[in-house]
Length: 251
Image 1 (cartoon, rainbow, N blue to C red):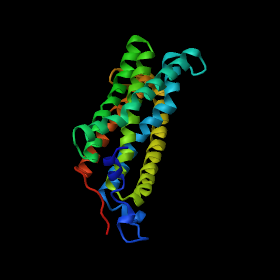
Image 2: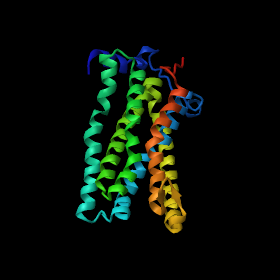
Image 3: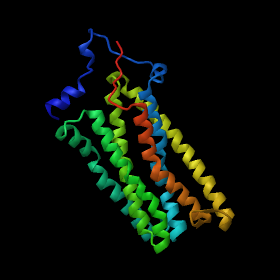
């Protein structure tokens, strides 16, 4: 870390206040701030996308392309998907650093700009089902879902950091926990919705259609549409609640 980064981290050091005193914001009071709801909403909307792909990708490759996870082909698809996630998401922390250090932006604005850019990556998921079914080739979905997953990891890393931008150090754990709870609830909801949707779509067959797809493929495409657009929606809500750098100050 350079000197500027160290100063930024220590800017709300409790030692700057009276000895022995540390600013603490009670849980109930945290919920009164727009900043908390920005984090909570963004986590609720976006965390579930990662868990959807984590849980349903093997089933998707098995059902749609006859490539179960027990087969060499299925394992290669999953490996490729997460290799893309791993490699590309490494750069998730570099982009805001570039904006802050090279462009002179303050940390929150730099992170929000980076998050906006990363929010466009999951749009790749919108093309996974159409290209995969059109070419009857699972490698298209594997690559495109991998890009979407990389976008999620980069977005998520910066979303965690925005908590430190807006709250005193003593309250970061509390707000991070609130966000994690919201993300967990969102993940539970999407798994339930997806499971019911896929069961219904499979039973309905050709009677269930969505944008040219029938039956279970239509169900998958509906979920991919949500996953592709969730981050842009989350970013818009977050930016609406906290349009500019607005740290919480409690005397």
